[in-house]
Length: 572
Ligand code: ARG
Image (cartoon, rainbow, N blue to C red):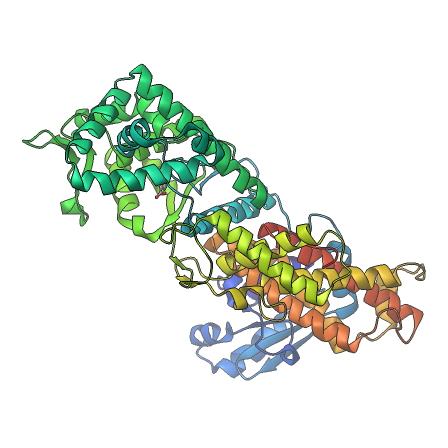
């Protein structure tokens, strides 16, 4: 256990003992002001009721009964009880903990498997800015779970099946260009898809042709199969380029098609009928009636016998359960699919699968890129690749202004650009929409990804400059002998709260819990380093303490940024 948790837990236990009531972690809070101690509780209100006393008296009562090893002072302020930690002991422990490479990690998830399904773009349709949010949110959640000791399985549930393939095959046969397909498959296939719709308005027969191609594909006809295979393969290669750039990794690319081809999609329809969960409508559609459950009915098979998107989700969930016996199965998908997932989870419940409770739709809001903020070739769809390039271009400009001497500018600019994009996506509650603004996202001084990277680089610079010769004395003794000033103390205490915020982020599935924490931590660091020179500290002992503090800050920020899928930069 980290010192922060240890102290909090000891307070909780003592409070339970003193009051003979149940006390939870939530009953112990962070005081609003630093001069009100390090922990605080308002449990006296409840205790007062029990004892028939006033809350102020109750607070005094509780204080009298408490005896805590790591606490220096207990103070009663009206009905509130404030606890002050033993500074030197506490702070030196924090500095030791925060030096460790995996600071904040734990083993709480040992033996539990978490499925995180995210990104899941569609073959032959562009990977757009909404997919970016899913991609970075999913990857970050995966990082967080991993850090807490869970086994994670990252799944990309590719949209690689559906009637659109009939359309694309039709269009490719008529207007396709193999060269263009090789060069930029996603772009070309999307072009064809758009063209198909334009032409189909004039020529009704095209739709019929497309239906036939799709039927053939479903029946496993060679020609269609071959084309589909090619489109899929080339698209995945292209997606992987983007993932590599973002350093995102999947364990599985099992897409929708797999569930059709393996027959699992039809099996689940049969199972639903056998279990009386689904029924056939007069015209032949098979549905799961959900109206009585307050939802709309879920179609799982069309009248022509083809299964659909939702069927494949049912089959996929079942297979995941059989394969992984997951502790949680998370779908990081936009809020426009809220109803879809409600229907799917409800159907799983009706099928008798208790593990439906372990499935969760991690729903996120829209991302709005301002119009005209970048040149897009198509005008309609903004592609992620273009956004990344634009981000790099804009960061490059800033870097050339601020640090023209910097080596490998290109690389740094790409990292800064990505940080701007990623941070904007993650520093927001997931159900909120995002209005993306370039200037705001790239502002080195505002609350942005680049700002955090910059602080990391600055800390790195300070450490490099002062590292050579510091005294060989143990930090704990030094802290005991030297009264810490407020800035140092506050920074160290803030560092101690990192593990708590990782856990909270996991519980709420909110990356904002970490991003906001890192911002606050960095603000505190800025105050620290304005007030406390490291290299030119007043004494050698203070220099050592500040250096250790800077190192602890740097590592905390580094681990935090990594959880958010942002590259900590040594220089920028
Ligand atoms: N391919 C879909 C889209 O781009 C998202 C898939 C979400 N995952 C799922 N299991 N249904 O809209």
